[in-house]
Length: 142
Image 1: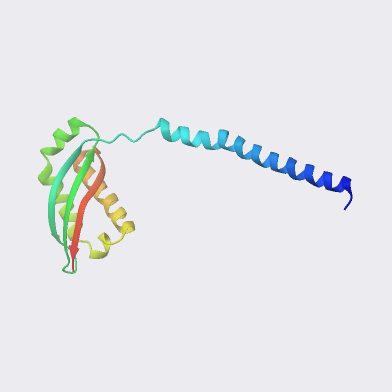
Image 2: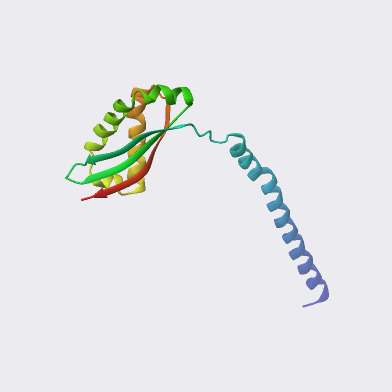
């Protein structure tokens, strides 16, 4: 290999590496910065929690579920309003869970679907003041 070819290859490698590093830095400063800024500008606002206490439920098929559920609500006023409806909220939870097989609480995917259904049913009573359903404890037995 002659000297000119070797110099040309070295310059091409250095130039290619420089363009690659420069492109990566540019992408991090423009593309990824925009995404992280969007996350920072909209932090999740955690609301107060309303505990429904411990529930013992006979699931479909004879399994038993023992769970503790809390509800995240939008603000303190909603918390005060919903404390008066705790019995109604417990009844809604019971009516949803009584019709469920054990499989609905055994996998994270099924539990997420169940939480979504509970949130919808509970918000029918709570006028959309509940933002999340939290299973604090789940114990089941077949």
